[in-house]
Image (cartoon, rainbow, N blue to C red; front, top):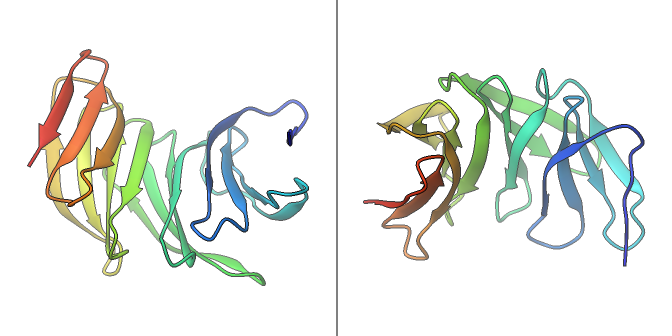
Length: 164
């Protein structure tokens, strides 16, 4: 068993790059940290990724991008490679904490769920909002249906909802 410990810090979100070669994570100090899965050695650290913490994180299936959400509602898109990690875009439409982000299989769209009661579908190539849905809930999690024809959400209203 591998245990990665960063003293006095809380990890808000975590995932594996699709190739399995690194673990990415978002922390309450606003940093993104990536580690080797075999040893836990730090690969890179992106400082000042989000003010007040990185609360949601996911990667594209081609391992080239991370999409992150923050405590203040920002969505950021990062180009990732071995030598550098650069922010490509910062999108701000949520008014509350971003709890969950998912990327579609074509790596051209992402959907984010927020505590403000909104889910937003983003075009992550042109960095624009495609659609927005509102409910009287604090969205906590969302996932694409395997066919990507529907989105499944859950939130503070104790309901599971399908969005077509």
